Length: 90
Image 1 (cartoon, rainbow, N blue to C red):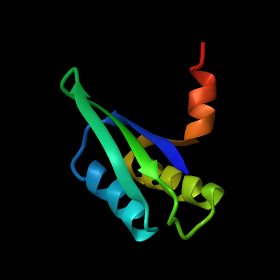
Image 2 (spheres, rainbow, N blue to C red):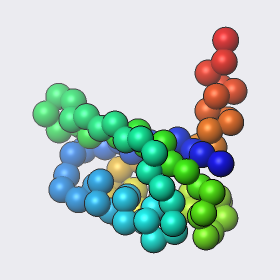
Image 3 (cartoon, rainbow, N blue to C red):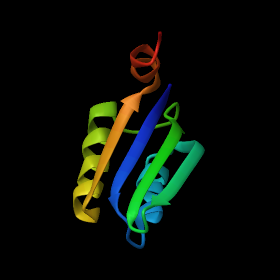
Image 4 (tube, rainbow, N blue to C red):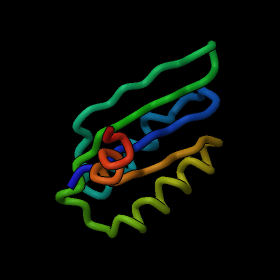
């Protein structure tokens, strides 16, 4: 199972490290990552992650990543790939 992870907010040091460490601590593989700094201070990142070996439930992972976002002052959202694909089907 794969999921799309988005992170957005004011740029600051340690965002990628914090999110990557959380994912790694639960045996989650990052398949692809794109990040950009827009307008000088707006950070945006999208990750495609593989959850096959994840050691916690999807809701628990979502809650932990959202808590990371709160501590970073950013919005973090995790969405199952099937839901993402269904939302963007024409």
